[in-house]
Image 1 (cartoon, rainbow, N blue to C red):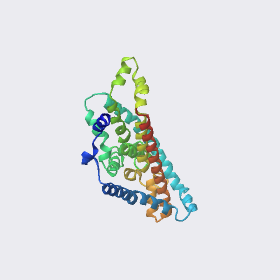
Image 2 (image 1 turned 180 degrees about the vertical axis):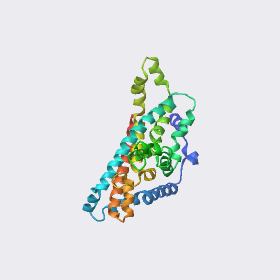
Image 3 (image 1 turned 120 degrees about the horizontal axis):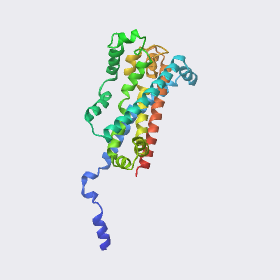
Length: 289
């Protein structure tokens, strides 16, 4: 009897604290609201994209994807992402390492600049590049004199993509590195490891899942960017149109089946991103002690 009483005393008294429990109807209401929001604003539009894309059959769907201009837009989207993601990977790791592992003057200012693309409209970002590199921009005359084309060309699209994807890797790694502290790196340095050895054998294994998570988000943003790329691209058919711009052109030309077919590719990429994101989160949770 005394043992049972002692166990009962040590158990948390959840019933005594009404703040820790909710009535069943409140839980059902919250669950219903969450599912309704998901169905109306996420699931239904996604289903509508695939329904409209396949309305005229698979032959029309694949013909739209095989179109020369669409294929060119797909290649340009891949190219922009293939350049922007590695650049932001290098910057993100370097910035996170500097901010989390070192103290220096201007540290908070650097953090603020990293967050800048989150607060600036993508359209404004595109206009900034036009102001800098356009024909009437600051460097426009010099670029024209040396026959260098940035705006309305692939370099401008890459620059715009780099800008909008700038924070993702760094913002994923900074809090992770800060939470891990500096003890392991300092111990490795004391034992004679070089900076590169310390990063490769100590830091990188600790941040690998966060790094992969940031790369996945960065890549997804690069594929779906519209505003900044639209400003700097010039909408040159077959040359400077990415997949999002191609969707807009096809829709404005009343080629709805083709527009939704291309949009379905972007939707599939988004779903793949979510699956990869979930896998990374699961692996990270599994390997975390």
